[in-house]
Length: 63
Image (cartoon, rainbow, N blue to C red; front, top):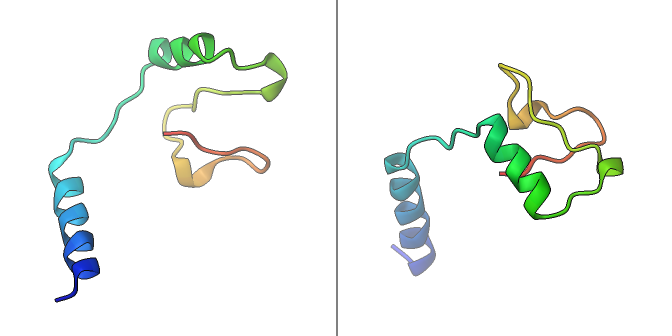
């Protein structure tokens, strides 16, 4: 096993132990306010059931 393989295994194991990150609307609004997102950036809180993989065209996902 190479050092790179060991690192990948450790990352996968660590990720499996972490709970999913759950954002609230209040947390999102705080992020927008604290980091001074411009209104014309069009930041949007996702609708129920939306995932990072399904970001609309022209949008990026932050997590």
